[in-house]
Image (cartoon, rainbow, N blue to C red; front, side, top):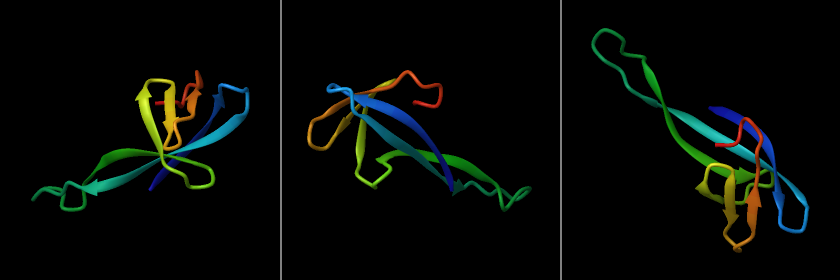
Length: 75
């Protein structure tokens, strides 16, 4: 499991740490039965709340709060 985190900012200026989770998925072949590929990206707050990606650097909580980030790790 791959985990990276980056800061994002709410409209009121509050900083929220977002976590990008990417689990590998099996992609084995006859030549390489243990091969994996990166899975889908999952975004969550550091507390575990789900985050929706609107576009690169723009995110939304399930409550409708808009978050923005220009951090290099922000998908």
